[in-house]
Amino acid sequence: MKRLINITPNKPAKWLLGLLPFVILLVIYMIASDARLAENPNDKLLPGFGQMGDSIKALAFEPNKRTGDYVFWQDTLSSLQRLGLGVAISAFIGFFIGIVNGALPLIRSAFSPLLTVISLIPPMAILPVLFIVFGLDELSKVALIVIGVAPFIARDIQRGTAAIPLELRVKAQTLGASSWQLIWRVLVPQMMPQLINAVRLSLGSAWLFLIAAEAIASTDGLGYRIFLVRRYMSMDIILPYVAWITLLAFVIDYVLAQISRRCFPWHHQETEK
Image (tube, rainbow, N blue to C red; front, top):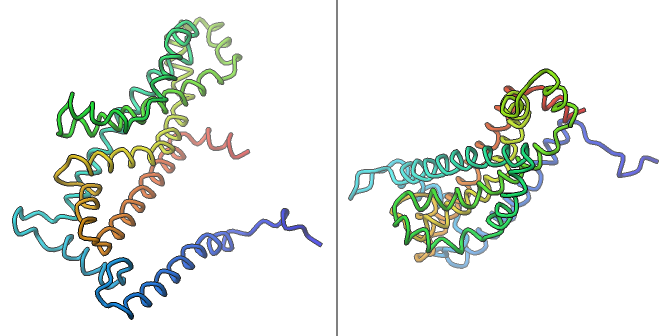
């Protein structure tokens, strides 16, 4: 008798099993929504898919009477611009600090404790400070993402750099490489896939910081819209916005994964062995 622990589904079965929880949740929501709407057609807690579709259609395809903007797409563009800029700056700063700390023991001894302390500071706790220092414009929102994400990336890159086999460093030095040549020609290429992985892992936190900043001080953005309509209990807008954020996060993660596979196939061949 084959033990459960040894049963591995084939590819079609994996797809079906992966979709099954989503289908179950969807069916449960539809049943619950129909039951509540049957009792109260004006119920706002569990709107029907038709209600959500009408609300998003109005935001996405009908211009705002005051500004002329298509609100849904303007919110999406604003949030993606803030997210992209914040994550890009975080990746650059985190990669630089992580490589230098991981490669040079002298630098690591001096700055690694400081990096650890900074990474333990809750970014949301200093959000008021950012608003005071940088104002309520875009800079404070991007700064929150950078402060929250960059230390995580830096620590991850530092650990990965320090874990690179000593043999590679010795061989490079035997061939006459200087410290900076060793970093640039050996360590940086080795850590590029790790950087993409670190960015992928930090995207959830980046979205959290973005939405929090938009909710507190913004005039557009996905997080701003969700917190704006919550006072009216407009779940027909909130739920589609949450689903849209989730879809965007999934697409960004998928794109980064494909970039990593195409640009660094050697890394994935090693990890899949």
